[in-house]
Length: 193
Image (cartoon, rainbow, N blue to C red; front, side):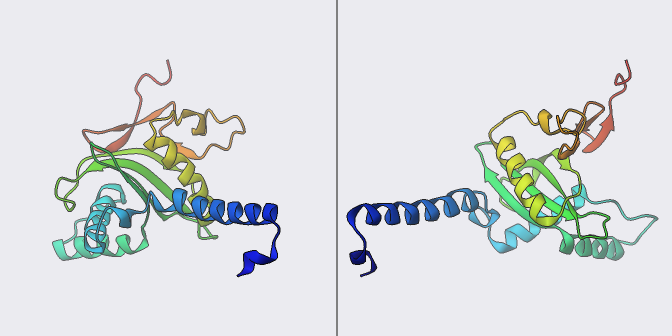
């Protein structure tokens, strides 16, 4: 066995390092995987509903088949990164392509409930990020997701409040908020006062 070559203190350091590496890789990454909560069929059905609620609407009058085809195509570009279940429903983080020459994406963090794990209800967008490179989006989006799930204040990450003036969150901010009734972002009427 490989451990017989090491002195007792080296064995302890080696075992501790292996244990720490396996814990850190599994604890942070696996607890928010959507696959932990949904089957692949449920994930696709819910992702399509998230696309319907977050995607730019098709322009002009389109037929039902065109409408469905548009959202099916848009759905192929979305990625579902994180999910977390609470007693009230699910937090999510999805991303979509953003206009960019460098393959950047923007993320949407939010909440919904789904009594049957198929149809979403109580949908709410909590934040939109600025566009970022995919690896940067995954890292920064993961930090924002963890804070959202834990009910922590996201305002320090608003662009208008970030100390380095490179906040990660585009919406909401001091001027814009999410209206749950219309399920859209709106500007505060009293923002200039």
